[in-house]
Image (cartoon, rainbow, N blue to C red; front, side, top):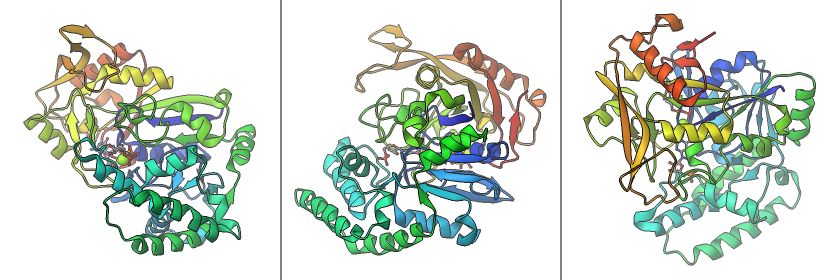
Length: 421
Ligand code: GDP
Ligand code: IMO
Ligand code: MG
């Protein structure tokens, strides 16, 4: 069982990029299995912050192989920009990164469709990142998609035009202005960049490497509460963000899965629309946003902030089969006199522990209040040095969830990480 999975338990932005980068030294391969440029995975080292959208977060380790799996939807324009901004020369990066020929392409017209659909929804919009994710996955499942492997075929341009014409026909039904040429130029330049990289049936490679006892880390994007089946539908993304998504998104058997790491912030954030039971609309929410720099890595939008939601987290742990918990941004909570943690919900006057089906249900969080801690913990590197109140907070979560917290992150840098024995 050589394949571990790391994924988000909340609404995304839990700190996956930072932790995948910090864990990369113990793996041989880092593979993204779903999502696309809607993701923004930040990581920091040597005082430089990088934000990755499509490229796996192991890319800065020269001796690691990174794979963009078949479950990802890839926008060539975003890919090119990201490659050029990474730092190492393209000739070096082509040795570190392989792309599945079965990953579906996001076309310029997918981005336009995404925007047209959102615009037409008025007040009930999803809050999409507008990167074309929904329309690209729709074409994939309706068997109308173009895939990365298609770019190597002679009739690619012809196929592209057919797809574009289909999309333009749909767009006639929307009163939406767009400039296709603006997107297309960068997109076709991106196709040329993609061609420089190895494109293959990565499912064979990944299974072969797992068979040779190479260690593989599957990197999730978004979070469980944004999963298309189990999130707060329709305010979700369009892929399976859960552990099962790693099997379909990379072509691996569940038999090969070892640990499933669930990553969560010490509090909660959500960007975009949709239910958020523990959201704070007061000064405490503003404090979390300001201290935690809670602004979207992809869109720059302010993130909605609130207390930790244990019923939602227990649900995520169950759906994913989490074996170990990683807690990030504990440092952001320093200085709060008390910390609240939601342990159940009240709906129609009754206590419940499960997420309701209807997103319209009025749910009131029921909180337990714990003592906060004052100390700045960003310099701590040993679990035993952490303040007693933080250890109690950790113990409370472990007792409630039944899963050990084996890593605590105390800052954005890869060094600001405490692994617990
Ligand atoms: P991802 O999408 O899950 O990779 O998370 P994002 O990168 O979108 O958002 C997490 C943000 O928190 C980024 O700005 C990180 O640099 C930062 N971050 C990650 N871990 C920590 C931490 O433990 N403490 C603090 N203060 N910031 C962190
Ligand atoms: P990472 O990987 C946070 C949210 C959007 C919107 C909804 C649907 O950085 O954690 P989409 O563009 O997928 O159609 O948007 O999902 N969303 C994210 N929120 N982190 C992300 O990724 C997200 N990717 C999508 O804000 O509410
Ligand atoms: Mg993010």
